[in-house]
Image 1 (tube, rainbow, N blue to C red):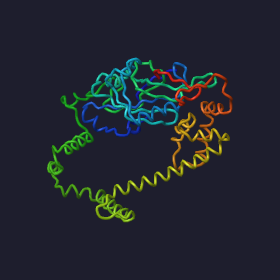
Image 2 (cartoon, one colour; image 1 turned 30 degrees about the vertical axis):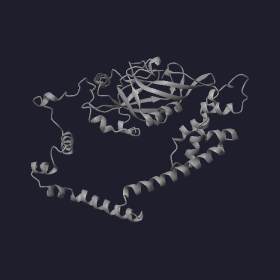
Image 3 (cartoon, rainbow, N blue to C red; image 1 turned 135 degrees about the horizontal axis):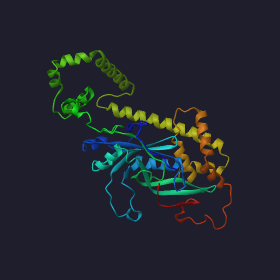
Image 4 (cartoon, rainbow, N blue to C red; image 1 turned 90 degrees about the vertical axis):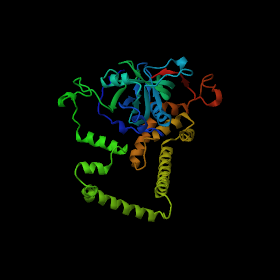
Length: 377
C-alpha cells in the first residue's frame, strides 16, 4: 500500500506542539534559510503486510515528545547503530496523534540545503521510521502494537514502507509553475519590493537588536512618541488598564502581597486545579471501564501500565479529555474494547496456555506471544 506525498495545507507547522525543552528560536537564529515540515503517518498496513496500529504510532509520538528524534537520508545500517554517528539532516522536535494518524514536526538542519531544495521542488516527500517493533499475531495477521523508534528518515520517492506524506512546510517554497524564491526580483529594477508586513517584521527585528529605537521610527514618520502613544489610546490603553485592574483583583483573591510573585502563585493555583480536575476525570473513566469489563483479571491489568492491555489503554485514554460528555466517553471506551488487538488480548485471559508455549519469559518482563525485531517502518 503506497500513498504519494504532496505538499498541502492540511495542517500548519504550529499545529503540532513542541517537545519539552525545545527552543525554536535557537534554530532560527543560526539558519538564514530556516525550514520546518510536518509529516503524516496513518495507522494501517505496510508494504511488508504488517498492520501498524494507532498504539504503535502513539508510542512513537510519545518518544518524540520526551526525547525528540533525529532524521537521516535513508536508514542507518543496523550493525552500525551502536557505534557510528551519522550527521542528522532533520531534527524531529514535536508530534501529536489526531484520529488514526500521527503527525511529526521537524526542522531541516542548516547543513542540509540539498534536502530543503528537494522538498521544495517535490522530489522528496516521504519518510520511514527505523526502530524496534513489538509484534502480536491475531487471527493470522501480524499486528505492530508498540514501537521503539530510533529515527525518522527521508526516503526516495515511493520507497517508504508506510503511506506517508508532507502536509505542511515553513520557509520559502517553490510555486507550482516552477518559479522559486526571488522570482519577482526583476520587476523593480532588480530589487524585490517589500510588502508592509515584511517591512514591519524587519523593523521589529532591528528594534529587538537595538539597531534602531521607537523614537527614531516616530521621528522618521514625523510623529512624536506622545503622538504615537495617542494613536493607541483608544484600544491599547483601554485594554492595558483593564488588564491591570483584573490583575489587582486576582492578586487580592489569591492573598498576594509584598514581594510575592503573582505569576508563580497563579501558576501553582492553576496547576492544582488542573491536577484535581484530571484526577476526578481519570477516576470517572476508570469506574466506567470497570462497569464494562466483567473479568476481574482484566480489570486489574487494564489499570496497570506495566501490562500489555494496561499500556494500550493508557495510550487510548489520552484521547479522552475532561469536559467530555459521559456518552462520548462511553463510546470511546467501547471503541477501545472492540479493537481487534484488544479483543485478542482479552480473549487470551480466558484461554489455557498450551504446553510449551509462552512459558519462558526472560527477566519476567516479556509478554506472552510477543517478539521483538528491528526493522524499517
